[in-house]
Length: 220
Image (cartoon, rainbow, N blue to C red; front, side, top):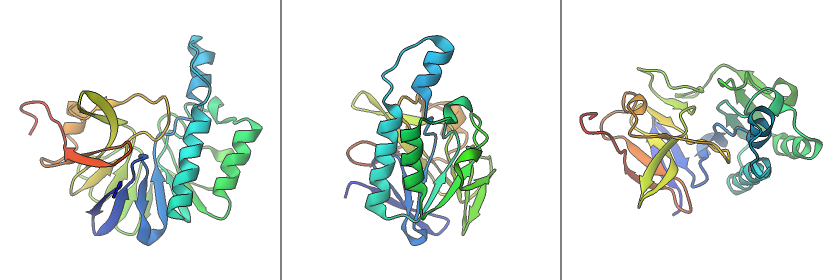
């Protein structure tokens, strides 16, 4: 099996190799930190040129995950766009996203890069409570049953840094789903302070592979 199944607050969840989180019982797919329009923002603000294909690659992955899971609900955990101007999608990309949204409950959670793409329809929330789980952009200390993003966690396996989920008994932190997103090493103390001893890093790629969350010496 290429995905990784686990339970959080009684909810049976699956970490997909793509970086999406599937909650089959609720027909729900959750993604975080798509950062659509990053190459355009880099060109606009810094003059840096990146191949302008990240929107196509990210939406293609989302399209495939929705087809594979049949999810009728999507939660985007914030930072869907790299900034407000990047939310002004071109016609082809806007139509593609509208097709993905059609017939589904679509929830935009407010991020720190964008307040939620209010022109695209769907629901707009600071956070969402669904059954035993709370969905928000940034993890909160002491929370339980929490699903969040923001940190873009990465872990190394065989010398290669790969985006990963971080999972313990209280929360799951999702990797960045978008192309061209950077990442924070999961041995960073900001993440060590959030995740309990015994937490797992579930690496994305061809297979979702769980390993003990790497930590610096002395961080538990």
